[in-house]
Length: 139
Image (cartoon, rainbow, N blue to C red; front, side):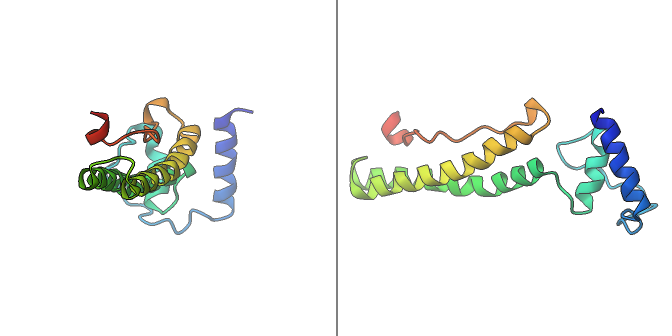
C-alpha cells in the first residue's frame, strides 16, 4: 500500500471521527505560508502546524534552533577561558571545553534524529563539531 493511500485512509478516519470539526480558521482563507516549507505539497503540513501539530522532525528542528545559541555561547566561553589563562590545558579552559562538547553532543543527538526523520535531504541540519578547538587555539 502506498504512503498516499495510507495517509488518505487516516484522513478519512479522522473526518469520520469528527477530528476536523473545530479546526481553527475553518472556512477561512489559509494564513500565508511564512515558513521555509512552501508549495502545494506542504499545504497539509502548514494547516497542521497552524493548529499546533508538528511532525517529530519539525519539532526537533525547532528544539535545535532554540538550543544552538547555547552551544555557540559554550564555544565562546571556552575561547574566553583560553584567552584568560593563556592555555588550552588550564583547568578552567578544560572545564569550558568539556561544557562545549557536552552541549554540542546533546544538540547533535537531536540533529541526527532530525536528519533521519526529515523527508528531504536539503532540509537536513549540520552538526556541531564535537572535536573542535576554539579559533584562538586552532587558528
